[in-house]
Length: 335
Ligand SMILES: Cc1cc2nc3c(=O)[nH]c(=O)nc-3n(C[C@H](O)[C@H](O)[C@H](O)COP(=O)(O)O)c2cc1C
Image (cartoon, rainbow, N blue to C red):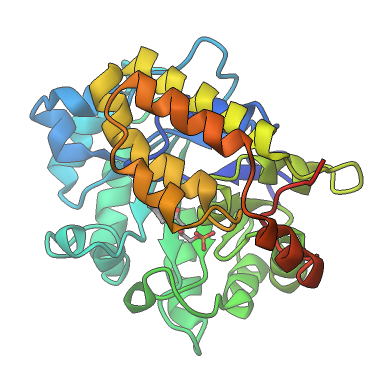
């Protein structure tokens, strides 16, 4: 088997609307090396959408950074690849797994994955011109029968894919339900390139299970890392891992959002940062009152006051709950 990522790599997925530079920096503070920028729509790049060009920025301290394309038209993808060649990435990934209705309607993402001939034509148009190694990210095509997924991956391999990330859910399941590890395993058995397993990794138990049941040593994290950059530290070194305290949680949220303010501006950062803040609070015992305050954060002062309150920690009932649920994947450490 040819490795593209070193053995046992843990990748941060491209997450549309999330994995901007401040987001990646937060993950990197906890040990994430292999991170992807936000997905780039090939058409937006070709037609010069200003917002799209921001997705191409690489931080000075980013040792490794991947880009991801979305599209279906080979001509547009060729043009977009030539534009992409002017930027600095370590890999160019092709999205064959996005199930969002507006993407599927255009025949891209997961809809393209279901049309292997068209998918390969599109993929070839990128490989032919890219100065970067090209990989693909797909969903499984069938839950019961591995053959269609194996076939797509073999064809991607023959077209020059250096690695393939497989999300073990079909298009119609979006992000819910079982992850079919056996289908990922069947692909891994049949190709020579590295297969990265993806889907449902939220902590050590799911991490161990996906690796064991797919036979893939490397894994991509998505929702498990949202609001939880500590997961990188946990999976890289579970023996010494300590959950963050309320103060550590608040400090990381503050650093992340202040970085966003530097990167965008105060009002935009606080607006798009609300979903980021809510992700940090998820599963950590902060009640509805704190969560509803998030939508009212408009100024830096509001945010600072909010952070001070987060430092006070969740209600006492959370610590009682934790006594009964000591294995909760996202939790705070009581000091
Ligand atoms: C908010 C959000 C945005 C996503 N954006 C992308 C994307 O731009 N490109 C992509 O390949 N997958 C994207 N995904 C899918 C994830 O990369 C991943 O395949 C999926 O969430 C399954 O992994 P998980 O169960 O660990 O979350 C996104 C998922 C979420 C929840």
